[in-house]
Image (cartoon, rainbow, N blue to C red; front, side):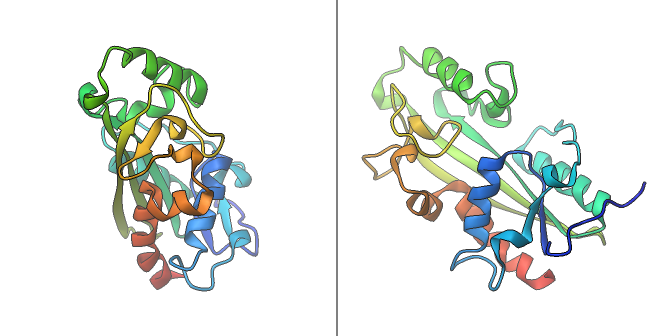
Length: 211
């Protein structure tokens, strides 16, 4: 398989076609607790390389994150990172889980996913609406080295969306100890406590060793 040409400024490749996620992870990885000296324009998404997204047929967040990172590392012969994340609702046995992005049947339709989940939980009392955002962040190197770090943000599901920030299920999860939804937090506030923030700050130490 031919190796894909990577822009000269690229230092780190991220397997994603989601531009919201790219922005969020650039802010985390290039922040004060991220990878020292890494600039946001040095983090390049697989979408910008014209690469298709691999089939995510793993049964855990960890497996799907590795599938994406492995595919990007193989296509570029460069270090690659990826995440798989979603919402785990206690009363649904951890669902939507790995199916969070396509819970309504169509991948990436945030509003439809959110509306369906709220309808499914309409009769669940407030005392039983606990949920968590979960993230597995993976680093894969061309030599086959693989590292996965995990993050988790516990909270409670609201009965209607609140806030205009974030994406996905952010408008309906209120983090533990907060009065606001994730979508009502500033980007910096959210990144400081989020599941992705936790996982990628842990992975930043591993990334720094290979850049």
